[in-house]
Image 1 (cartoon, rainbow, N blue to C red):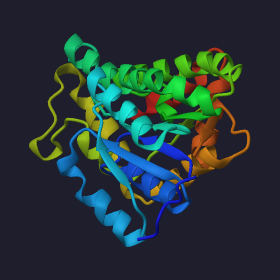
Image 2: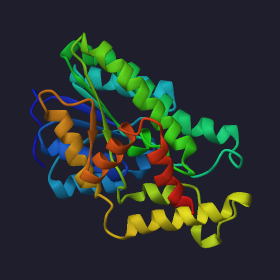
Image 3: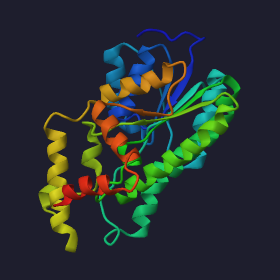
Length: 284
């Protein structure tokens, strides 16, 4: 494997067991970043190690559970102890959830928020002093679901909206001290993510009064993931790399033309009617 120079910039990436996180970790290492690839369960790192070996790059694989403040602190402190600096963080760890308010418990919603919102804040808070020291970069992988609310994704979109609002508010403040803050917004990505939404399609769908609408939504969504229009993890990771390496990255960065059009339609939809008409068609 190629050796990483001691002078290399150091990036920590969360959620690297699969998908965008795995692809971004390999891409960053290939680009010369000293890459600390973290995941909640290091026994699930086989795919990550295999991808790194195939690419001929070295990764520093470490445990980091974004919902455990002690785990977050240990990971960040370990990077500083071993390398003396942290130049960038990519908040990628996240969890999907499919459901609707009447059927979900508040505990379900809180769990989604813990991973997708508070977990991002925990990592970012621990990293910021070190990013300030080097004029570093804080990048968070959100989603077009952080801009456009989508049926049966209420909790997920709420968490992503919260992340985007927080980071949009933080960006000018962090910028006064030399830290660049950006969010990267993928659309549909062909990863394991769509398989981890908590619905057993083969067992049938029973959402009570919402069953018909949920079936319509799932049929439409599965078709989107199977018809070849979903972006590859590597494609999304390329955009993350552009945000890492750009001299002055934008705050909000979409990963495809489709995502740009989708987000753009929402941002121009002052009264919300265009988005409601669109997403309403997804549920029948």
